Figure (spheres, rainbow, N blue to C red):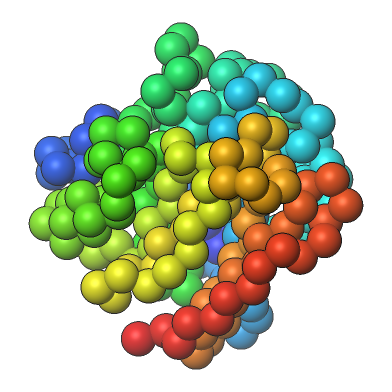
Amino acid sequence: MKELLKRVTNVVDVKKAEVPLHVVDTKEEGLKFDKDLEIIIVSDNHRVKKGLEKVLKRYTSADCFLHCGDSNLDRSTDVMRPFVTVRGNTDYQQGYAEDEFVELESGTRIWVTHGHRYSVNSSTDELVKSAKNGSIETMDEMLPIDIIAYGHTHKVDVKMQEGFLIINPGSISKPRDGTRRTYGRLLIKSNCYEIQIFDVSDHAIIKEFQFLRE
């Protein structure tokens, strides 16, 4: 994570997020919004390192790396260190928080969660409800959420819902929706979001999306 990463906060539950467990990297200076921000999003590798290694090798200049859980790898593992990572339903003693909130210098706020506690197998309605009702307080300001990144379903899901950009990059090792092993790349531009879903085996683009920033 580079200087654009203004703040990372982990909390146990977004619904009870008034007091963060801890805050790291509170740099206020640094990146202004004069370039596209590149965010790489992965999920559900289930102990398989190869896909993560390929992503990190390809995107050496990415601004931020997010992992939506079920890594089954300890946070001290080399391949996990670049990622802001949350605990999935099959992660036990790896030391990750249930939720992470990333605030970028661009003003964008991302909630990273695995999703299993929010019934994501049926819909993303509970995620959106929690994002609307659970704005987080860090330091002396309230931080509304702009983007929700989640996993658990092993299925790609990219959409706008009630003003939130929602991204599930699918599984980087064990897809369930008939597609290939995938990861996501989010470009935050001054006027829009651009999302690409890639096949990790050859980095071929599978799906592309663009949404205007409100």
